[in-house]
Amino acid sequence: MTDENIYKQIDSLRSLIEFHNIQYYQLNDSKISDSEYDELFNQLKKFEELYPHLVNPASPTQKVGSPALDQFAKVNHKSPMLSLGNVFDKHQLEVWYARISRLLDDDSFEMQCELKFDGLAVSILYENGSLTTGSTRGNGIIGENITNNIKTLKNLPHNIKFTSNSLIDVRGEVYCPLDQFHNFNKERE
Image (cartoon, rainbow, N blue to C red):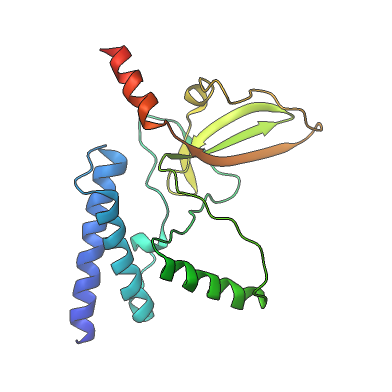
């Protein structure tokens, strides 16, 4: 396969992934399942690993999240909000473990695995113990201000005990269990 053919395949995958990113993140109208999206994304990652000279900074593999929506005020993150990697089977976990062992020069480290929750990645800033800003990941550098929305979560403290002159950036995933989501929709009918 020539570089030109490979480039065309990579470019086609990038365009397809960007289309699905817009559908999912901006239009809230997903056209494919999460597993189908992950398959496309992983194909692109493999191509870019095999042909690093064809990696482009604008590639979906080089970005996280999506642009902030215009209907929300923008928030500049104090530090980039990156994304965690995924593994989908035992082989991928073993490859990941071997890579981390090499990087640490140690294969006796402890690790924990957990199921991935698919929700909304958020940053919650506490200044001097008070919740001041809630924001989405956005593109990793600029997110959407969702402070008023995030304050409606009953299990999220608005104040925490911490030393004065402190800034704490709590990052995590906000999600709603499926059964609660269905109950919420029934109540709205």
